[in-house]
Image 1 (cartoon, rainbow, N blue to C red):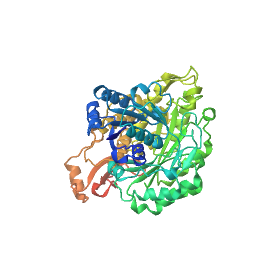
Image 2 (spheres, rainbow, N blue to C red):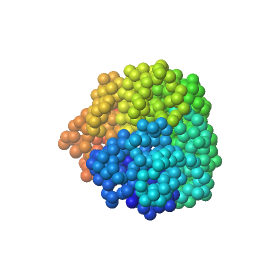
Image 3 (cartoon, rainbow, N blue to C red):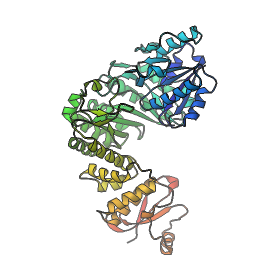
Image 4 (cartoon, rainbow, N blue to C red):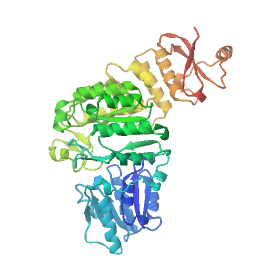
Length: 525
């Protein structure tokens, strides 16, 4: 038996590549796929790997799981030297000499043909050692590629994030990325539609397209969006796409505007607003179009918009990055991810960086310092990242942050990020910290009122954090009764501001959580 052990970063993820390998192998009846994650203890993973006595264990290797793969494969080989270990995937496709001793066979590049050849060779040799150790994968014609969306795939993706592929590669050649190395190849549209039909009625959380630039071929992307919209009643989940904002057109944005709210999610990689930086890494983009099109997407209020910046790129100093953060923040996307450059094996950027660039030589190969930004400044960005992620990206404090965070959002998230950095905090902890942080500079009644409204709109526990509690006495209970507000149905709170215009005054806000999070209010003045 041949086992493909997929080590995901989280429980909700499922690697797509194992199903491509299995469905395109002549001996697929002998292949078993196990989806698990790197957060399991090593002994549990060892037991999963050895269950059913496999002759071969294949590991898809990525930047997020390679440490776990190496540790687990070493344990397997120590205790069971007769088991053959195969490595494949992007993390072992480049600069793999130091990894060859950790496995019996290694597959580079696109793995379907190479994996099938290796398994057939092993079958023919009766699973004896082969002289050939490295099998080089090559891009293949999609018409010969069997579908990975099998019964096993849908069984393994139930109530998880599932993945879908409409194209491979990318037409762009950004030097920090390797997706553009082999250009762009798209599946036939009719095949894409037929594959999407397999997801009808499936119980998954999100269908995430793995295409590096989904809208690289404009009409291709729009036809897929149209197909999803026209068949929306069959899909009880959202579709996630990575897109380039500067090549969007009005027809694409109009499709989003006419789609049901929540059907689509778009991840927009801005990376930098520094023109010299963009030119250096050969990221061809029109910044003004990026800004305008993100604004248009956000204005539709129909899709979840996620934007990205990368710290540590050439010519990007601390001041220019902070300026870029504030500029992107002003566009009001639903999420703003502040990421840090990963100097990936096989990327053009790695071969170009001089000795003045410092980065970790172990996964995830993150930048330490550059001639333009110091390690101390990158640490400040990490503080801001933490603050932005835990407060802005959570979506739990929308009204509060919109009101109080205006002039210099970066500085706000930097300061609160310093307080919470690397701490395990409950929701109540985060609420208390934000409350105390804001009350240093703003009126306590206003802070408490806004934070209470945000809390009621996102939490139905009927328990208030300590800083948001009020005097729930007999008079308040009597007032509820007089107003006909049954406390068994409604959760009611008294605040000191008008929930609409935030002017001062006593107001009762209440919500029936059995009907969602629609707040109602009554003046008590």
